Image (cartoon, rainbow, N blue to C red; front, side):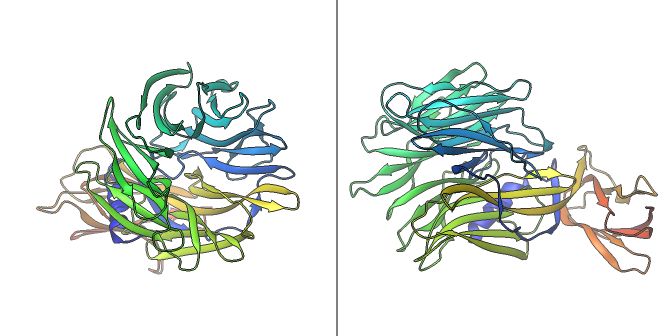
Length: 505
């Protein structure tokens, strides 16, 4: 991404540093490809938080939903993904009809190591001789329920997109007869609590919506047919029940709506694909939620290739520069289709690719938000790949090792201090508390907390950031170190303090 979008994403993260602080201290390259399903025709995988971020939860596991085909019918299936995914697959449907385009959302959480307590899956179904939308609801206390009709009224309905609002309440956008419908829905009681047609005044055909929330506002982007039969991308912002007039995300060329990659604090970043530069490339338009100002940037531009299906995630991490933690997209060349994978950690980048077929293949990818276990965050990219007479789901995984920096309360200390780690001796995890005072005319202090061995050699930096005044606690994991005496040193402003810690294994 270019500098403006980079700045927007950093700004999005900055407001969370008081309450939730996480720091990467190492990342691994992408894994070798591995198969998630076998012996079936499985397509169109989707995780929750697809292409956008409306919460900050990092889960112990996540749901992956997909299509499983057995001509002439298909079923909607769900699979639990954790650090070691099993072969277990649950069928949400069983009847004789064609089903497609599943979408899923789960808890809009703001914590780490979260368990999913509410989830909703929606999909298109042709069981009534037209395309309707059906759903299935999950609650942690009762599990997955039975499928139910979400919208079976007259006409065809397509492309549901949904996010969790809170608890069992979901916001949903979908296409109906060339219009974009927005609903609020209680999935537990199956009750529509708000319903509006966002494009009823527009005579052009509108399709392929995406949805994100920011504070009390909703943003819906969608494609709109132009007089030349190409598509533009528009958006509307709603503070219910009031919606703004439509505004343009992308107009020149033929454009496809690709969802969102950022929200919550700062700028709304809408992604789209466009052929305005020749081949299809990926762009972003950032929307200022306060002023409505728009800024457009190129995200992926590979001359000679067509690029689509951009997915990205980022975690609230304290770094100087963080456009994303991981991203992927489909690159179509003259003779092959590749999944291109990106990763970033400040000045270090990781890239990878995997060939998934020739240009006749239809490939889609999805990326999860992040699975957290023992200070490992696992990011998966899942895609369908043809193998013999099957189309199976494959994945590549990237592990991010993180350590926690936690703000303790809201008080502002009147002096710098470094506390003795506890427990001490420790094996292998200990915690270190420190205080950062408020300096005159300085809002943030440069803070460095480092670990040294007994010879004075630096082992690692636990903190190397600007921090606001306050009391903090950081976790140090000495699992990769041998038993012995180590030292930790805090430097902030003119303050320096060093203390000893003992690792006993």
